[in-house]
Image: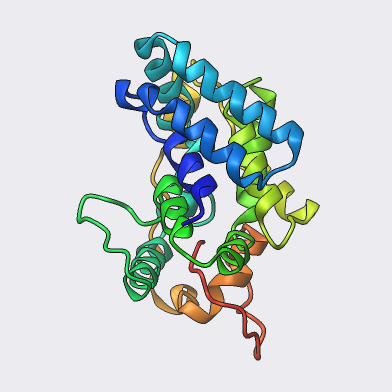
Length: 241
C-alpha cells in the first residue's frame, strides 16, 4: 500500500467530520513516505491543517463550489476529454474492467474515472506501476492544478503532488489543450449552464476509434478525435480519456 495515494484520495473527497478526525494519521503517512518534494509536502500539510481546523460547513461549501459546480474542475477525468460523447461510456467500461482485473471491485453507484477512486486504486498497486499509470492522465492533472492556482485554492497542492509523482511529465501543448476548454466563474450561472450543456453523441464511423488501443494517445492529446496509439507500445493501457 502506498499511503500517499490514499491520503490524496481522501483529501479530494467531500469533507466530513470523520475526515477531520483522521488528519493526524494523514500527516503521519505523508511524512513517513516522503514521496513529494518538500515545498509540495508543506502545502499538503497546510491543506490538512485547514481541514482539521475549519468549520465543516464552510469546508463543504468550498468543495462543492470548486468540484461539483464547476465543470472545468470536475474530478471525473473523462469529463476533460470525452465530455458527454459516446466514447466516454466505453472508456468507463474499459477502466472498470482494468480495476476488476487488478482486484478492485467498483460499486454500481461509483464512476470509475472519479479521481479519488483512481488514486485509491493506485494505492493498492506496486509503486513503480502506479507511477507509470499516473503518468498517462498527467496533463489533465496538471491543468487542474493550474486552474486551482488561478483561484488561489489550497487544493492545488494535491494535483501538484500527483504531477510530481507521475513517471511521465506533462507536455506544455497537452496542458494547453485542456486549458483551452471553457473555465467559467462558478458564480456566473449562465456561463455554467452553457458549460454543462450536453455534447452530441456521435455514431457511425466517426465513433469507431473508441477501442482500447486508441485511448492512451487521445488522453495525451487531450482532444477529440485523435489518432490511435502507436503500434508496438508495451506500456500498460489505462483508459483514462
